[in-house]
Length: 251
Image (cartoon, rainbow, N blue to C red):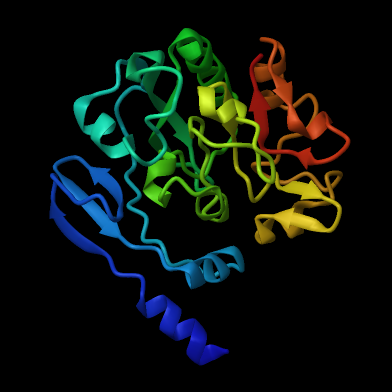
């Protein structure tokens, strides 16, 4: 088992290259450069069981908090096309908006994240996250799903908070509210998806006792719950089955 684990980890290769890119790998933009990596099937098992193979650049932001929206920049359109954005989507790029959002991480550092949501709710989402920010609620990271090949299980296992992804609801042929930029997931590890004996991501098993409240958990009446539900959003934690504690959606 150890040999298989080591082999899988070796398959994860990080290479710094200039922006411009290839269509065969996931990409992560960092200003004037992109980090490329090619996930392998075995990588899911490694990440989902608590082995951290991602290298995260932590930057302490000292400027004023930022909460802005804009049309999708050209480099973001290039990033999402064929990944989270598909030709069969019944809308164009102008249906969406690109958000820059300040948030606190679990170490108390102020970070700058990004999300893509439907343009019509962009201002509302900024208001929600500004409220969450001022309440001091921690969000581990906030990166586009395209950094994970648009695959939820990579993003969730990395405790990433995310919005737009043109995809169906797991196990169905029905488009998710994420497909329309009308759903947001926050801290999936502290707020796992639970259906029967299934816990997703696996690291979320530590948080299935919702009475044992710890940092990053979403509960009724907490700042995250209030910020969303007071504006008409639905919380997956109120569902009977599945319980989707990290999920909020707008109708």
